[in-house]
Structure formats: structure tokens, C-alpha cells
Amino acid sequence: MEYSTLLISIENNIALITINRPDKLNALNKITIKELSAALQLLEKDKKIRAILITGQGEKAFVAGADISEFADYTVKEGTKLAGKGQKSLFDLLANLSTPVIALVNGFALGGGLELAMACHFRIASTNAKMGLPEVSLGVIPGYGGTQRLPQLIGKGRAMEMIMTASMIDAQKAYSFGLVNHVVPQDELLSFGQKVALTICKNSPVAISYAIKAVNAGFINNVNGYKTEIDAFGKCFGTKDFKEGTTAFLAKRKAKFPGA
Image (cartoon, rainbow, N blue to C red; front, side, top):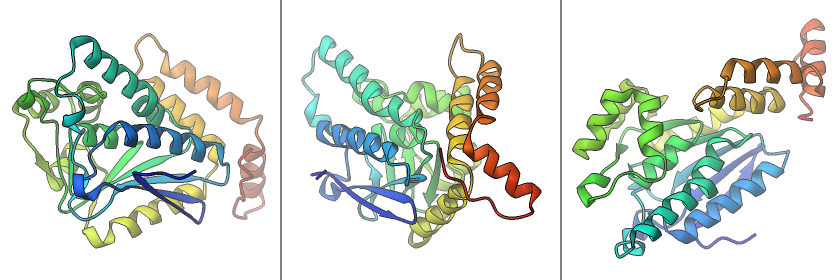
């Protein structure tokens, strides 16, 4: 499949998605959201892909936000539809993907860009990264899950401050808040991300997919995360990965997971 706003490469069972709109600081428009959704669904179906990295083209931005020119004149009905469709087709899809997804945040990750990074399973930032949700300065609020995922990651008080002040934080503060897992020099961001992804690839893809589901369940209202964990734990016993993992452990050798 060809993409007009994305670059995709695959190496060592790791897919790299680069949002390629550097002249617009990789801002999310309708086409980019549609293409990201399609690409993620295709990559998830490919069982050879064990991890996915998402980054932005160039040194200035991961994703500098949504393309405001597309919705500046929207009505209430159109705005509601925009947020609902975007959350379902991309952001919730991404958060619940069974393949691990890591955001490599280079430069600005603002508004929809930070929301995209937060929907990934975790984040690695370069030292020049700047993150924020500036929507209230435009008379609107985050609409792609930002008001929910940010407090889950950094706590209610800090999230309230970031949202209400519309201010940016740097990579070190994001790290201290728990918003990103690692901070590395920009020229090492991709290689470091690949190194982490390769470590993930050594483990059972089936077990990882169950772990993602179980962890996410703990953040869903009216869902018993412990029950989800118990069920997922039990299902692991019926997989080839479990048989291989335990056999390898007892034989004192490294496991080679078939992923099915």
C-alpha cells in the first residue's frame, strides 16, 4: 500500500512509521489519521512484525498538533464527529493494538501529537523534545483522548496544570513526570528505540498481546482488570509460545517463540 503522508520501513521484525509532513511540522490532518489507521491495521496482521516504532520526519517535530485549518469553521455537530471518529479509528485502535508500539518523540509533540504519543504503549524522547496540550489557548479542549490519558500517565494535578496553562514541558520534566520512559540525544533516538524494540522481540508476542490487554483493562470503567488478567493468564497455557518458553527454560536454552 502506498501512503502520501507516511514512510514505512521494516527491519529485524520491527516496523518504523515516519509521519512525513515536515513542511507542516508533521501536523495530523484527515489523510494522515486515515493512513496511520490503515498502516497500523496492516502491520498488526503481519505476524512477522513484533514491534512498531512511530516518529516524525526531521529534527523539529514528532507531530506539532492537528491541522487546525481543517476544522477552524466546524459546527458543534462536526466537532463532535471529528473527535469521535478520530478516537475510534486511530487513537483507541493504537492504544489497544496487540503489537507493541513505541513513540519516538523528536522535537515538538503538541496537541494531537502528544495525544498520539500517549496512545502508544510507551514513549522515548530526544533531549530537544517539547510536549504540551495547548488546546485551551484556541478555545477548545483536547479531543483525541488527552484529558483521559495524560492524568493516567502523570496524575490528575499535573495534567490539570498542563491542560489549563496550555504550557509546554521539556524532555527532562516529561521524564520526571513519567510521561516518557527514556530521554536520549536526538542522534541516538532511533537506534535506542530499535534496541528497546529488539529486546521486546525476544519475548513471546502472544504473551505480550495478552499483557497489553490486561494492563489496559485496569483503566476502563466497569471492567475488572484483575479478572482480565486471570483470564489472559489462563489462555497463555494453551499457546505454542507457553510450551516453547517453559520447555526452553527447563532445557536451559533461549526460547524461540513461534508467535502463534
